[in-house]
Length: 455
Image 1 (cartoon, helix red, strand yellow):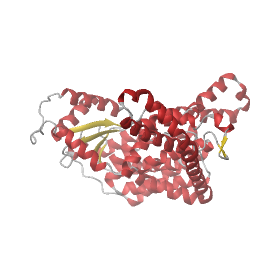
Image 2 (cartoon, rainbow, N blue to C red):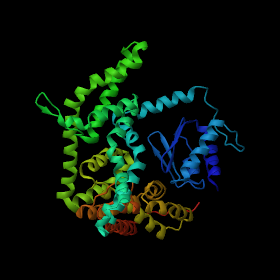
Image 3 (cartoon, rainbow, N blue to C red):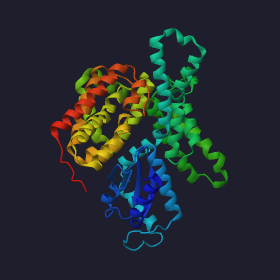
Image 4 (tube, helix red, strand yellow):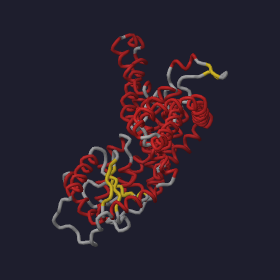
């Protein structure tokens, strides 16, 4: 079945359940429905190209895999936008009255709008647009590091120096990018957010001492930018309500910069510096002193964190580690969870008699090796239960290897085999990866699972 037909079949199944909102991530079609409780989950799982279905709060997630999800989502949105009438539509309850969908949408938002969940969502939205840049620059830097080890003299070549600039570009502008995205997420002017980020990273700060306080450009890194721009955005929104409309265009931005700058430099940036320094110290110390044991625990619990969405809060930690040390020693450990998932899924493929399950695994394994684990999580290990535990065990053993050798990565957003190119100890990273594959496989073979009956 082609992907347009997949979108049409999903649309036919879900149209009667009042589709309120549609969007997608790298692997999943994400839907909010007016009647989520009665959604036909079993029928959705049988649609061609669907690798799995997951309910996350009030969100229905249909796992399709990278590449495929974009085409299905685009076609699905077209069907929804055009309200296309499709033959053989299932008979269900009557349509909601006009305006009811928006009311339900607001109810869904309110139900999920706990402060902690909203904070994690905002953090994710701030950093997700930066992931492609992190990947590109991290890979360039990683490949250059390999080349320098082979032939150190190439560092003097102009072309190589240009590549070094390209590899470092995202980190040079990182504070500005984060400032822009933070303001956007707060509902304020993105350019004012970027401007505040520049103010606290401006090199002239290093020459200024005020009230016996020596200012330091860039102190606090990403954490300071988040605090400062969150404050300036809050201030901007308040000022928009107070300043007369006729003066708002020029007076509000002026007041934001004038009022926010001094608290930013003397309160929020130092606070951000304390938080950032402690985060960096805590992570590196935990891995440095805890060694394999720390890696075992971190690698083993990461999949449950992904299931709860708490992993989104780790992104600024990765970014800050990169900002302070040039590598994140946390990412290679966490990447082992996906590798354990691969090993456990291979074991399921070997043992299962279910042809549909074998087909799902065969479709999801290639992207699993590339570090995209959602199809395997939601299509294989989690529905079966015990293989998910085996995957966590595989991730734990792989994480122990990464922590023991203190492997660091120069990028974020990558996982699996592709991450190897941006690590500072490629052979040790690959050793940990293979360890996770093998441990996940063996654990799944020992623990076993209930083979689903062929339908």
